Image 1 (cartoon, rainbow, N blue to C red):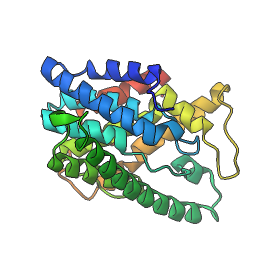
Image 2 (image 1 turned 90 degrees about the vertical axis):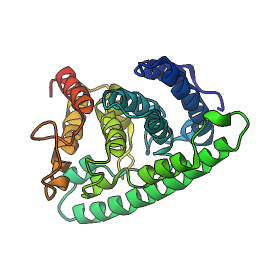
Image 3 (image 1 turned 135 degrees about the vertical axis):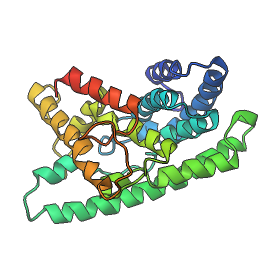
Length: 271
């Protein structure tokens, strides 16, 4: 399972078209293929449904490039964001989701909350370690050459990976002044509204090993409602910081393009 599947190559090719500058586009394409091929062989090809679907990183990459282009990130920042997209979720976990906690009885909720916190911390730490490993491996390879990330860019990517889920643990992270980290967060946060992201949530077994009926429209509607709640309820994380500038009065989005994509998905799903 070392070869990157055609469907993922197609998503990558579609994603890089968001980069308007031709020279930058080719740099990002080359970097993305090096990263995608390596992380696929090391991790995503073996991803269990308890964690996520294998398409996750590629959809996040597409989201990130759209947002990064609108935010006018530098080429170096786009390179770091590309590396983040393919490395941030390489430490697999049997996920305890926000929906599972909302549906739990009052006795089980504290236990699930504590377990979610522990697993997310381990997930981020493991992902950061994996990111440093694979980025260093690629940097040292002849195939990657001079077009690969610098050591400083690798450090920055690893730092973002190490904190990318803190917002799901009640932390006001990242702050809005860190536009690169915000772009990465929003590209990742939009995943549960994508049809493949919804399917991933429906296919994920609960703690009793049961999955939702992915052929039932009502289950899709329910899952989308839960995913929307996460993008709204966690806005309170940043309430103590009056200098944070959000696009609307309810969601976590601080970039115009991230918010546009969020609204487009809401319109598509009639949420």
